[in-house]
Image (cartoon, rainbow, N blue to C red):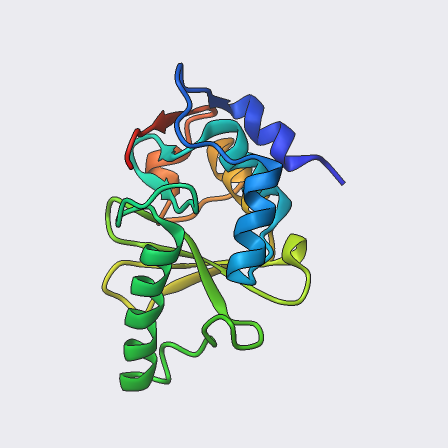
Length: 181
């Protein structure tokens, strides 16, 4: 199986300065405190590129800042609370469980358009799949892929995803580092 994080890294230009990157120790402490064990490729992405996103469009949540827009705990709670409300009002359209429920959704990011980007969790973080919800819509896209594989295949035009492709499918993407508290 290809190393999609390595392939993705070759398709992303690195920022000149990396802000609030993770370390193995910081991840261990956060995972112990939160009770969430994250996929290796996500941790590698945050460790290598720090706080930020791709092409000023896809923004990654991170546990190493407190800014309400990208702080993992704050933003994921906000996103999951909103999803729970939608699921309660429209159960036919919002059928996924919410983390920590079995196979629950857990956010990893969002887009400038307001699209919400989730993992569908299970017991093994490195086998979590991807669910992307369109902004203000019950429409979603489900991928039995890792985060790195999805991003790599969108950037290299191997997959078309209406949420991501128009902003990312360019054979290479630019990682935009942001210095927030």
